Length: 532
Image (cartoon, rainbow, N blue to C red; front, side):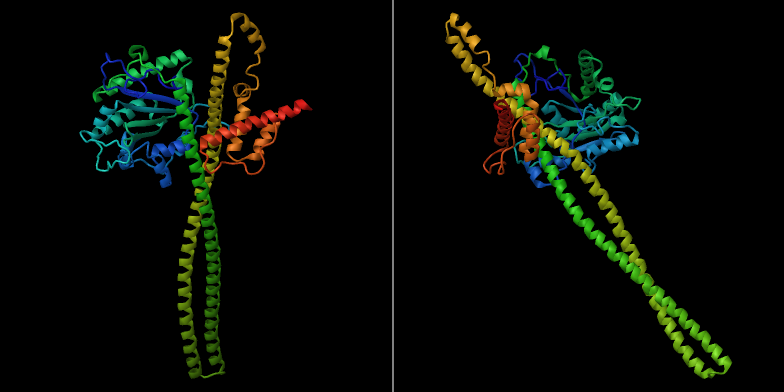
């Protein structure tokens, strides 16, 4: 079974297919297209290798080689090669892109994303040839934990990446390329190209830009895209891939497909949980920083006020002294004091004035420094507040994704459990039925019309969404929400206090237990209603 959005052309080097011996293995191009309704922070972090904690790096070490991470790069406007910018997330790049073009994201403000606004391309080829392009004659050790820090990047991979960038720019418009990341730290070097399906009239339209008006047209477009891409890849010794009809390659089984999807969903949820935890810690740190900065601002403002008062008092004192000198001169003229007495008093007053002037200069200097420091703190506070807002916005955008992914994961678990139950039950059912004489089977069939009634499979078929919603709420620890959902569907209450993951229980086992409890809650309430 093909994953939604994947090209119908599949290649002989993929691990789940064994090519017939008569087919000569050649270096082939690889192109995969996946439509999505946006891109999550977790996906962005993985593309950019932006992991905020060492734990994440260890957790994902199976997927890439940290000693080769420095070889990764991205291609920017004009085909310029730059290091991967980890600070500017792909969702932020998309947001900035749309803002600059005055384009509104159609999913903005919706409870759940509805429109396909991102085309995720993976561009690459057969491993051996991609290694030659990326590393030349250098031998990369692909064993887990190997040290490949001395491996250098070949100029040829940069030329190939720039040609791919130019091709995608010409095909879909350079301004619609939100990110173009080249990974050389995985088993097979490849490109992640994030395209916004925006028309020349600055409107999102997956059909107009990518799919066409029908499945047939979409298939035709993908075939043409493979052909066009192969013309660019020829000079890099990458041939066009063969179709399934030509090779007879075997697809993944349904079980393999959904097993991989469940694993991918689990990883995504784990990534999101980690991101949310990190954001919460950052928010907490920012709250402390903001509190400290607000205290510093209050202290600075008080100091400014104090210094201003001091300067005003000193100026008043200086003016009072100048008036005293003026009075001395009047007293001499009036004969109240002698000129000698006036000179002595004038000298004292002038000395006092000079000291006062020095104090004023000193306080003015301190005032200027205090104003500079206060302005600096205010700037830092403004930046902290802006970052605080960004982090809260990011977390709010991640939370729905987290819940959505957890819900999808729970549905996958439920269907897997249901299918296992159905397989076991129907296997026994059919074995017994086949053992009966033909004349008894008619009566047996009539008597067992309600064989699946009340089974897990039946509940999933009829009520999968509500069961999954209750189970997901239990899994996330929202017992009140689980009760609310269950009772609104005629079910019972959530379990009493103490519900949660056991110390020795893994995620899959806990999800299964949550699912069974969700089924029990929905069934128990209905049974009570029947009794009444």
